[in-house]
Image (cartoon, rainbow, N blue to C red; front, side, top):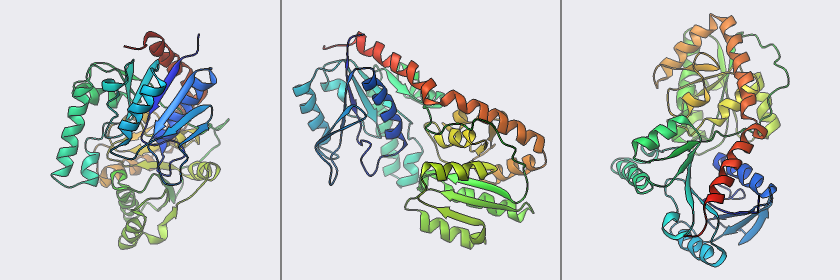
Length: 371
């Protein structure tokens, strides 16, 4: 195949201090396209201390503008350096409106429909305004092909009027254990939460689950891995619930240290408002640890209820605690969940996920071109 040119539009690039899971996943896909010999440019917002341009894994990183002006800078860059064979307009709340100005084939890339997440960060009426504009943007993009990471998000986009949505699952950097070691479901239960400590992640609910288990006579302890502005609030909550000695916060772990914690835990708990996919569920599964999660978008995709983990009946700490207490009385079932979760994690190794997705992107770019 002849070399193609791709333009990725993302508010953040991998070196941005605010970069997260979306940027790590995007980097994997773009680096693979560059490895195949294609010209890949990633346009992102400028940030303090950043170079205007750099290169990462064969990708040309270009930065310009700040929130509110970077779309104009991207437009000027594309006019000067384009047209590209495919422009990938990645949505993080607000898109780049690239179908207006890119003059070529454009697709939208979205990890999650924020929906109720607006309510986690903003009060009424701001939350309603955010939800309304998100729906209107999706309707504006209705005839643009969408790329997303889970069936839940696909269905949410279809509800918002989008015509075409392709699901391409994320891979994980966590290499599954080559063999599954034994891990007896013994007390005290070792629980883990792996998350950014932000309101939409509802880590406070996980601490309440811990308190319910201990109050029910099921000794448990919790490790919280992650950082964020709710750290002090969560510490105070643990103390007020009498769980200060049962909760350990580990804010900055490298991948090896994180994997050790995941492997030691009996269960990962995930109580987010909504996820695009729930990558940390697969990371835990790769370490032989099943998850108990809320019944929300993304988490019901990364967790196969009753097979690789458990999905609670409601979005309450009580509903998760009930699931755990039932599991404690059935260690054989726990072993079955561990085995299935570990085996399924092999399906999300990057070497398996990247090829079909990048083949698809190449086909889209090959059918594109200047308008």
